[in-house]
Image 1 (spheres, rainbow, N blue to C red):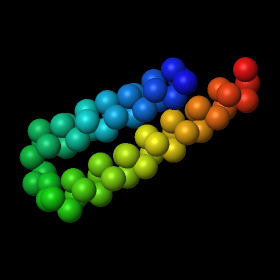
Image 2: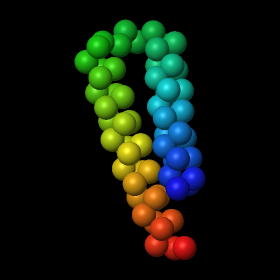
Image 3: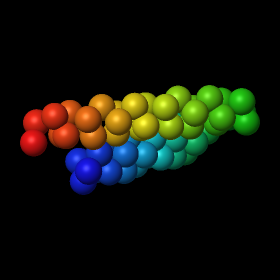
Length: 60
């Protein structure tokens, strides 16, 4: 369970760091880009956490 939470938090932190970097460079992000960006990272975070959760359950 802890490993799945670590994956969820890590992917979320990476998403925010990349977002801040793109925003800081001033490429003029639109609302559509922001929705897609965080939507894709949300899907990746949930999928990664789910896979990690079931992999850790199977190994113990």
